[in-house]
Length: 383
Figure 1: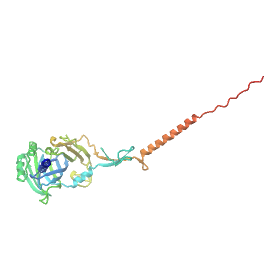
Figure 2 (figure 1 turned 180 degrees about the vertical axis):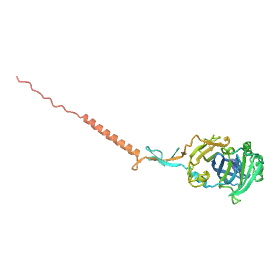
Figure 3 (figure 1 turned 60 degrees about the horizontal axis):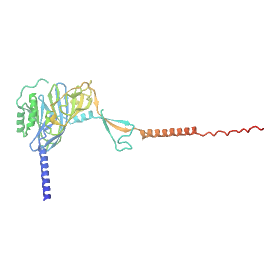
Figure 4 (figure 1 turned 90 degrees about the vertical axis):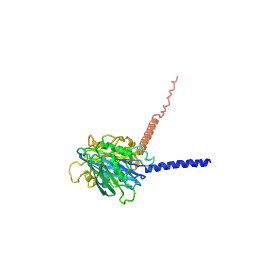
């Protein structure tokens, strides 16, 4: 009876854990970086990585996003709030390869005298890392479909929506359900008279799930300030990370952490005057003269997404000081293949031994016993 009771309890616990796991698979993970991903009920879609490049010239802004997704959803809708009406085109994956190359850390060697963890007589190698536009547009219809086109694997329905409820109706007509929490988070953008861009995503084959790294999407819109929408990330249930490349006339920085960890600068410097997608994105010609735009690479973690307070606004730093990460490889200093510390210690010990021997010899010479001469006995005189 006791064995049956244990088996029954085990079955109940296993069933509960299985139900909890299945529930997490079908729950909508719709928050992702600067936008929101909405997929069908009973499917799952998670954004595993998001990398964005932003270019701002003081009047307009371009955002190119690369999303890596995982799940079984055959289609989804991606929603992003923008301050002005946006156009949507495909980006080029080569842009991010160029950005990684331009902002890569440099590798340098440095020698140390005394042995550390990884040096003889210790074990294993050891590496250390060192520092090294105009006013808002007039009111539009609740939902206005600007156009619809096919861009690579995407069925793009570019629309504007000034009312979350109207956006909810549009999504419902296209097979998606706008979660109530997401509708609530969209309302502040209505107060600011922002618009939305909604894009229907579907694989090129039309039958398989959305998975892997999707083709980059580029949004272009007018903006007199550099803003990167982040408010919708408040809805994320897991920690979020932001990798952001910013191209502008000067080095840029966020005005505040907006509830996340302190943003980390990975690179700051002029855009290289080379051919490639980065040069096109930055508007740089290899034959042009004068200073090129500035490239700033930022990384930030949001361990508690619910603490996010708003959108990122980036401003010019006090100066354009360049920065590049340095990865140091520590090496034990050697002379003719022999650790310098060992030679030094051996030499010092030998010198100490020689000095001690000389001192001993000198002491022995000073202690040598001198035998006095025998006394001369003078006999007494006779008589």
